[in-house]
Length: 361
Ligand code: SF4
Ligand code: SF4
Image (tube, rainbow, N blue to C red; front, side, top):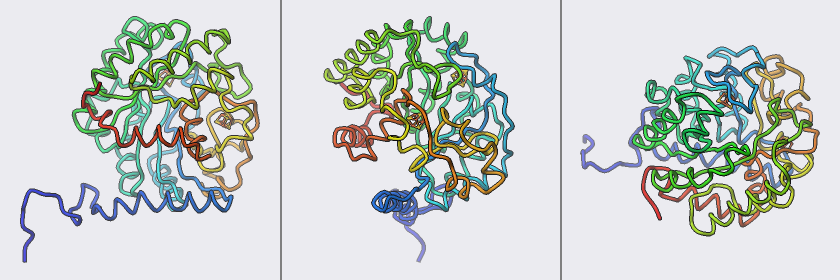
């Protein structure tokens, strides 16, 4: 008997990658179960991986010299092999990073491969290419668009014309049902413009994250937020906590904001307390597997290509250093520590009708 077209989705309806709802659910649940078991047994598991496709970028932001750090790039097939290996070892979430991931012409192929493997796929982007090449990135589950403040601040510290493109990218993702969060890199100039980002977040329906700038070299031993005084970092954290209490759509949890208020520059303290390299990590464009961007130099370069990506993950040196101010990483650290305040913040964001273009407040 043929399938009746009732207009309702059935559990065995297939998506564009040939997966049924049951298969999609299992693909998300299996790595999470593996993570929970590994966590309980104290074993490593590459659950959440950042895949840095390239150091190239069409921008030259004031606070970043990644595009100057030229680095070889794996080709499309090598990225497919990397994804297959890590997905087999328990990767449930992958974030495409750069540089700007969309300077690669094969970004769409890589995203589709992640989705075929059932991996929850996100991408960090400056938004420049999104509207023109949307079909390539439409299968993403979530996009993180960088947004540093109002047009004059954003364009001055990033790229002339980039504010309009970032807003257009957010609208495009939302109109297609892709969840959106933004990341604002706080410089002393941008710190005064938090409210502009929050008003946009409320009106457009996304969640905004904020973090202070790192040193341009992204080295763990380099200063963090050198242009800020300790007092101004604390005051920024207090402002964000106050706005969050008022109901503004801020992604940073109270727990991490409180760390920022107290410790300022190194949110979680020493790297030995971090779960990077145990439950999440980085693959650099040349195939180096590292705990994080800031400690990549502590690994054998190109180790994933040379040893295989799972072997490189297992043999990785534990990270060393005084810590960093990377907000998303410290949010994940608190989730993995089962901090109830951060777990609640994450659940609230996951079930929220924000991020899909629905107005709140
Ligand atoms: S911050 Fe992002 S968009 Fe700006 S130069 Fe660095 S990689 Fe490019
Ligand atoms: S605290 Fe974690 S993410 Fe930050 S530099 Fe250290 S190992 Fe890397």
